[in-house]
Length: 124
Image 1 (cartoon, rainbow, N blue to C red):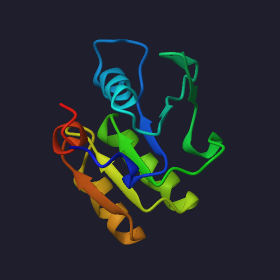
Image 2 (cartoon, one colour; image 1 turned 90 degrees about the vertical axis):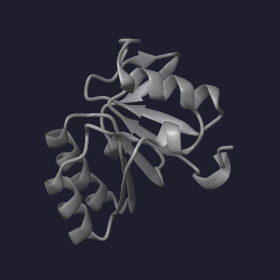
Image 3 (cartoon, helix red, strand yellow; image 1 turned 180 degrees about the vertical axis):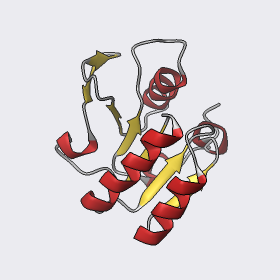
Image 4 (cartoon, rainbow, N blue to C red; image 1 turned 120 degrees about the vertical axis):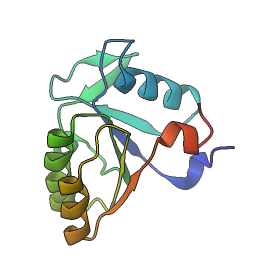
């Protein structure tokens, strides 16, 4: 069973209004499972009744975990932003990781996990 109290705030990057996309499904199912989750998408807006932040920098509270559900090039930019904000753990969903993003994170001392959060935490 998931250890929901493990994180105070989780940012999911790549939350989409499109219910067929993984960014939407992950956000929806984490909310249902009771995780303290906030969505991020450069477009902003609202998804499932939740305000979607346009960037990590825009968030009121700094997340202690970032989950990327975006293309690898976007993940590399997210690593830069995490470094500036002092975020130390990034979980790259399958398909969002790249060797470059992982190497960049390592140079900044950011811990990366490249696996499906949803499967490993028993949500899916």
